[in-house]
Length: 466
Image (tube, rainbow, N blue to C red; front, side):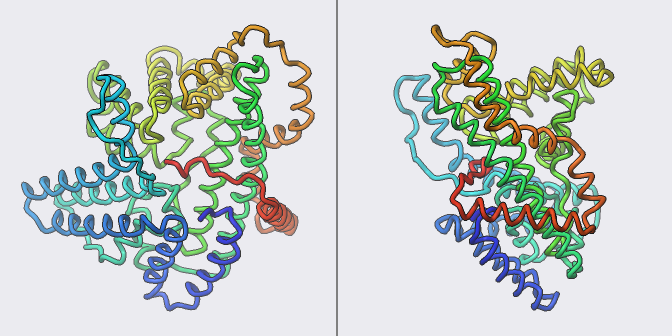
C-alpha cells in the first residue's frame, strides 16, 4: 500500500487514526502494531508471516543476548546476524548469485528460485540489527538497560510509517515515545501538513518529471543525442530525489501524527559541493547505519591510509548491493568509492572552499551516477553514457528541435524541480507553516495531488524494490 494512494489516504489512514486517538494511551502500541500488520498485509499478504516470524525469532535472540554471559552473548549475536542476513540473501541476492556463478563457470551451481522480494526487507532487517547490536554493545560495556517487551520490540520494527522505506531508526531515537508519547490535535495537524508537503513532492514533481525520463528511455539508446541524454539524466535525478524525499517527509509526518519524531533523512543533498558532502545529506540514516555498524568496527579512518581506503571500498560495495541485486548497483557503489577516495586524497578540500567549482562538479557528476543507478542492462548503460559524453550512435543528429520541444513541455516543471531542490521551500514551510497562505497552499497541493492520483497518473515508488 503506497502512502500516495487513495486507499491509504481516505480509508486506512482515516480509520486507523480514529481508532488510535480513541484508544487509551497504554493500549496504543497494540493499535499501532495491529494497524502495521494490516498495512503490510494489504500490500504483501504472503510475506506477513515471514516478517512476523523474523520479529519473533529476533526477540528470542534479543532475550538470549541480554540474559547470557559474555561468551554466549557473542555467539547469540553472531547467530542473530547470520539468520537476518541469510534471510535477506535468500530473498534478495540468491538469484543474482546463482546467475553470476552460472556466467562464470558456464553451468548452474545454484538453482534460480525466482522469489519475490518482500517489501521493506532491507529496511527492517537493518533496523533489527541496529537494535540487537546496540543492546549487545551496551551489555558488553556494563551499561544497565531496561528490557524491552515483545510488543514494544515488534512495534518498533514494523510500525507502518517507516516499515517499507525508512528512515532506518535507532531504538534510542524513539525509546521514550515507545513507552510514552504525547498525541494532540496540534501535533496531528503539523504531521498531516508535513505529510501533504511530502505527498506533493512525490505526486506533483517526482511522478511528473519521471514521465520525461520514461519518454526519453522509450525512444531507445540508439536514437539519443547528447543534449537529450543529459536532459533524461537530469529528469531521473529529480525523479528519484523528490520520490524518496517526498516519501521520507510523509513518513516523518505520519510519525508526528502518532506522537513520534523521526530523524531527518535528507538535508538538501543537491546543494553539496562534494560527493562526500552529498552522502552526508542523502539518505542520512542509511549512511549512519553503514558508518556505525560496518565502517567504524573495521577501524574507520583511525588506521593506516591503505586500510582506510579498504574500509571505504567495502562500505561502498555493500551500499551498492543494498540498493539492488544487480551489477549496475555494484558499479554505482564503486563509482562513489572512487570519487570519494579521490576527494579525500586530493581535491575535496578545494571543492568545499570554492562554491562555484563545487556546485559545477556536482551538477556534472550527480546525473551520471544516477544513470548508472537507473539502467540495469550494461549494454544500454554503456550506450547511454556514450551519448552523454558526445559519442551517440552513427546517424543521430544533434536533436536540437526535439530538445526544445521537450523543454517547452517540461521547462516549467524543471524550474520547479530546481527550486525545490534548494533550501528555500523547506525554510519557508518551517517559518510560515501556521500562516493562512501556507495552509491554503498546502490545501491546494493536496487537492491537486489527489486529483493526479485519482486520474490514474503514473505513481511508482522507486525505493520499494529495495
